[in-house]
Image (cartoon, rainbow, N blue to C red):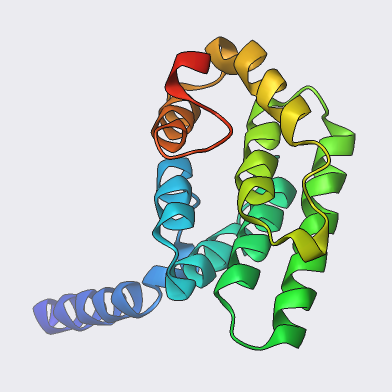
Length: 162
């Protein structure tokens, strides 16, 4: 009898754990950079979901960058504009609150370089490039790797700049 109860409880906990896997998904910075690079809307949505349940201090900046990236992948013009505006507000707010964060400048540079001219989001591109160059060595290895990887295909930031 005891064995049956233990087996039943184990089965229930196992099923619950499998079904709630996404509920307890934690934010992974390396995965964030992989997904923002991938350009797959499903991956961007998964990262936004992971961020929504996260309490990291960089949450607003990451959400902003993801929303603006999502804007470029969305088909409907009204959705594009909505995502871009919301993302811009989040990222710019994060930058206002922590203007010395080199990673935030990198996130903005990624978006600035690929944003369509019509949204007029490139005013800080040179300043961001210089700030990234200046702060590169003080950033975490994951962010340094993301910047180095990005610089290989960028028209603004080049590997020799780092």
